[in-house]
Length: 178
Image (cartoon, rainbow, N blue to C red; front, side, top):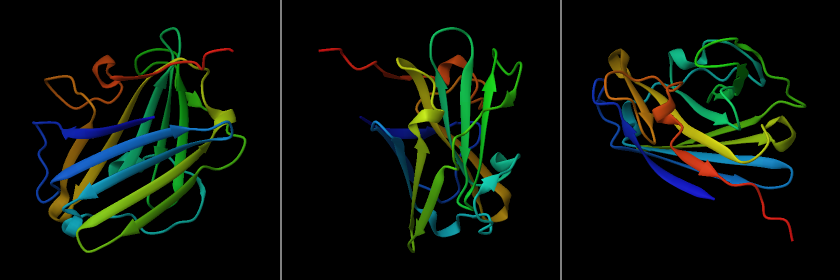
């Protein structure tokens, strides 16, 4: 439904990563997501931890989806190569954060080659806000030496902030009724 070439925020350039792309596909039962990181030879990945909720996943390599339906509220999904995940609801910009109810754990599957990382994730469709959406697909990338870069479809100019309105740069319409 959408493939995007993500852009690193200029205030935090990558060391070796040359490109990050992201795509999304919504089916009646699952939202499937794929991120591809090129130039991933120095990429730092968290240790495999098994499925389960965890906070603070954004402190190292992590992939994220931000989704807004109508109104000021939005949902945030953090998906880690460790297989850990987090899901939050916000009432407004960084306000009123609560745990988002999930009918089951998302599935997170990293596959790493010598210079590429493919990260697939699947979120149960029942856990998602109602369509139509404005959304952002993002990535926090950690490389050797503690180099952090922040990738998104679009950024606010001064600093990386995936919660900012500028990052909700893609749209997904509600299906048309026959």
